Length: 181
Ligand code: HQG
Image (cartoon, rainbow, N blue to C red):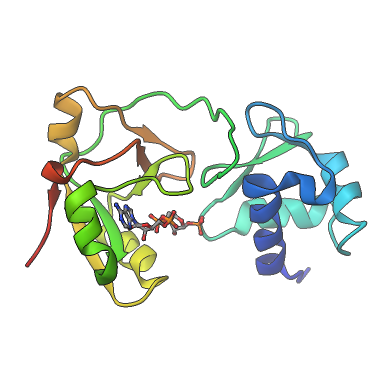
């Protein structure tokens, strides 16, 4: 079956992370939407959304953006929300260094203020350099910042890992960031 999974993924990101009200949907406090409700509300706006297409998107999404609960009656985004939801993360010990991909025009602001979560719940960091390169490339020529996450953790700052492997923290103060050049 070939459905337009990319388009559905974008639509689900909008609804499950940012604006469920757009299709009259409500998420519970942990970010879950009822699958039946999502399908019926979404189909008032778009065609082709059914349990099979949802399953396909959950299984094949390049960044594992979405997850079902155990009996597949509920679905939520794994991270990236701008609306307030409690994803019940537990704090975990980070690796010694994590990377953040951004672009040169933000460098001076980040040097002064550190990494801020902007419109998301957390600052997003990755263990792999390559992932950070991809994240930065969304905005132009990427620059990579190295975050001394081990030092942050030893100083009592908490880190979380989303279900799809993104490292999350509240803010990264400038003293923990290594700027090349
Ligand atoms: C920058 C995508 C100025 C920050 C990606 C970034 C990732 C500052 C932008 C995920 C700043 C925020 C997250 C400061 C941070 N001054 N700029 N003090 N602090 N910034 O999109 O990390 O497709 O909210 O460098 O693949 O780029 O949504 O964060 O450029 O995993 O699943 O402000 O989003 O995943 O941008 O990306 P974002 P991000 P999804």
